[in-house]
Length: 293
Image (cartoon, rainbow, N blue to C red; front, top):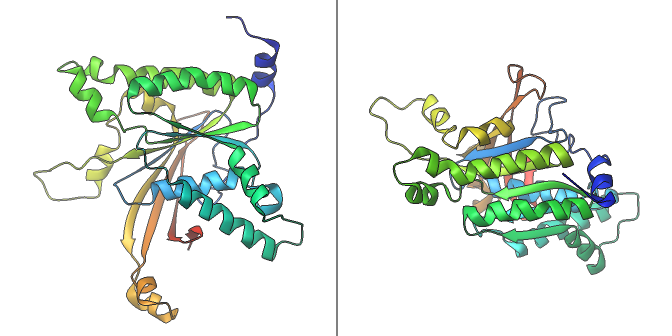
């Protein structure tokens, strides 16, 4: 394998570690390290994409506004990226930093443009396009040492399509995602980026009584090469906020009916998959983005 001096420098230079990207999500000292994958798993409407927006904003915002000031690649396979929503959250965070920080934080249009300049958005409509995107991503990683985070929403977008095209052969059904996992594993090893991805839960019918283990058994339906990459799993769920608690806060009728999302994190040690740590947290979604409770 040959590589240019720029590629060698980008690969060997220490990229920004995202271990503290959001401490409230992960166990103590358990955030994602260099070359690790975080999977947000849950049914539709459980706050997964909103959480990605929250993490994205944390990365692209300037340090003075509480951000990490690193570059991000967002691979949109569900075609659900709402740029107006993202810009609204960024603008809200900049205004909040301007009002609370003692440091100078510019909240003009130019600052917002600088934040968005740190974001590269790629749309994929098939697993073949996703595979090609990961191939060409190496060029971006070589030329942009500040690129530290890869977001994929979602990794399971083409699961049913690949199953249909693969026919009766399990190997054919999983072929493209397995190749994506293999290539991504090499990028993680060589360029030490951090990956966050969403994964849709699959509803299944069970003849026995419903139990909490039903959803757990669904979690490993993607191919084994992908599962071996995942270091942290965030199980996302949704619940209604207690009416009397919201009412006591004096909120509006809409606020009293707001939904609360819960995240249960399971983190495996990168050195030993047998060592696991756990943490749970709750959040709601506001006009300004995710708000932890």
